[in-house]
Structures are given as structure tokens and as C-alpha cells.
View 1 (spheres, rainbow, N blue to C red):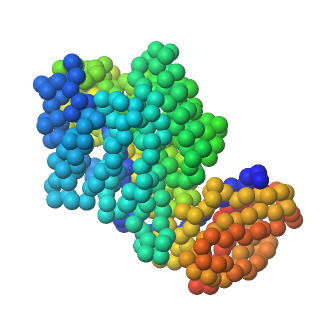
View 2: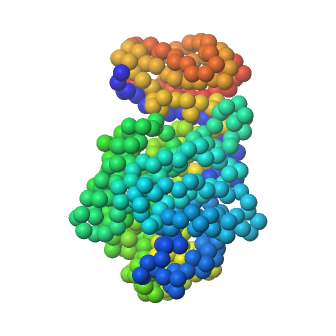
View 3: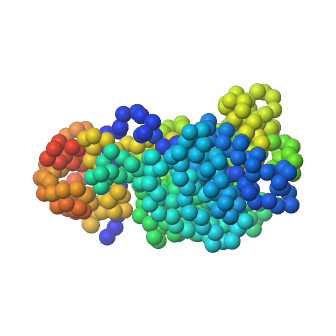
Length: 425
């Protein structure tokens, strides 16, 4: 069976409410609770960092916060949850479990808004040098009681640091491991990949492993499409995330803002909004980055007014990285929508040969639907009626008489609820 077409689900969006938006943030915390010869209790004390991180969380209020460089001891993971996240009247944050198969002193962690999201599973996707974690969640949509929801998968990675060729090779191996795991064990869908990638340009093999066509259904896209040599390049000043300072007490890296190490990347389903969640255009940014401090500290002249002064001070003191963030909008699950994305197989139309295709759909109860094939000019080419059983169904579609091109397939159930699918033959 060869997949020749692409299926895109287009569903009416919710009204714009905060409940329909997910704020996503990633942050390298710089050895939180992990004390070394250079990051000590004097220059990187976790109690001081609690206050700074809290200031940043109070400002951003993310629904998902993923972090790198936190101690492998669970005490520190719980401390951030209880002393940072669930403060200022907040009680809605929860955290994920810990992996550390690689045996690193610093690991990843995942915090989320349990009023909007449910953590379904946690998996290890690679463990060379440092673990990369996969957290799968589903949204608490209005249709959840009917068994309908939208899934979001977050891969959290911290790639090998360094500018030597061996470091680049290690980073390439790590991302190759991630993509191989996803291809072998997971179905495509709404995936984010976030972390400190320690990557100097978009031509590095580690980055190409994630973004090239060779990644197949797990190809990741940069929401801001800023390819090139990021390191030491003033053209990318608005997207640099490291380093926040030109001088430090020994723990933070110095040199000023000149590297784009930290990323949040998304699969096509999130960029295009085809499976219930959509990236909100232009929502991607690095908190505290105003584009005016290339090779400078973020607190240097000219005045950085991109965030309040207390937030800027917290960013300057807590880590040598800036957080990166973006917003997703829930585009399905509201009244009158048909909520099917969680049960699509391979998120595509399967063409069995040049004359027939299969469309996989699921319904919560036995129902009659009308299927219309419409050209892009609006001309109705075919009208079919099908009876679907509760659960998963396959509709076989005769495509032999259809010319090469793009078509809209409209599905309507007996209650008038509609969804549209774009088919590329």
C-alpha cells in the first residue's frame, strides 16, 4: 500500500477564549540544583533561582513549560512545582515523571496546566549522552465526555554542547535517534520538539535530521523559518537566545547575545492546523529578546523594554539562556464540530492504486453520513451516502475518474455536523 495523497482536516475553530489557547515555553535553567566547580551555591543558588523563575512564570503563565538543565534529583523537580509554579494563587500545575537512563547530572522536566491538559504517557526516545523525553497529552475539550479529544506530543531534548566536529557528530546521532524512534514506534500527529539544541547553523546534520524530507511524516518545521548561520550573525539578533551577559560570576557563559541554541519546532499538522491544534502565526519569540543587544548583555544600553524591568532582571540573573515560546490554538472540539483527528491512521488518505483510496474515520455511534467530492472551483463532482458503525470505519473512494489535482471532500452526518478534507491526487 503506497500513500500518495495528503489528508487535511479543516474544522471550524472555537471562539477566541483563553481556554482555546495553549501557551508553550521552553527554558534552559542552567544547572538548577546541580552544583559543579563553576556553578556553585554562591553564584547559582537554587533558592535565588526560585525567585527569578517565579517572576518569569508569573509574567508568561505557560500552559506547558519544558526545561533543560535541572538536577537529576526529584527533590528539585518538586521544588520548582511547589515553590515556583503553584504559587501566587496557582494550583493547576503538575509535572511529568523523570527519566535518566543516560545517567546525566542534568535532565529534562515537563510542567503542564492540568486544568487544560491530561498527561497520557511518557516515553524515552533516545539516551545517548542525555535522555530525550516524549510526553503525550490530550486536551480537555468540550467533547471529551463523548470520547473525542486532541492530542499533543512534546519531545524534549538537550543536545551535546560544543563546536568541535565530534560534538556535531554527537548532536547528529542524537537527533537521528529521535527521528528513528518516532518513525518506528509512533503515528504522525501534533508534535513539538523543544530544547537547547546547541546548534550553530541550520546546515548542521543534527538540524537537517529534523527538518529534511528524509524525516518523512515526522519532519519538523521552524515556525519563524530563520535558516542560515545563526552564530555570531547580527542578522539573527532577534532570535538569539544565548548568552544574556558579557560578564558573569563564573557559572553563566559570557559573550553577549550571539547564538540561537534554543528552539521549539513543530510538525506540519501543527503549522497547518490539520489535527485540532494550530500554531498561531507570529506568536514565536524569545522572552526578553528585543533584537537590539547583539553581542551585549540584555540589560545593556539601549534600554530593553520588551519585558517589564523585574522580568528582565530575572532573565539576566537566572540563566545564560532566554526562554523561547509560542502559542497554539485549539481548532476543534467545539459545538458543531466533528472531532476525529485522534483516530486517523497515518494522518493521510491511503491510495491503494490509481483508481481507489481509503478514508479512515471514527464516530461515537452508528450514523449516516453524506460524502461530497468538490472541485476547488466549488463544483460538486460526486455525492455518496454511507452508513458508519460506532468506532473506526474505512470509506473506500473510487478515484479512477478523477483527474490529477486537489479536491475537497465534505463529510456531513445526520445532525448536520460537517468536516472537510483536502485530497491531493
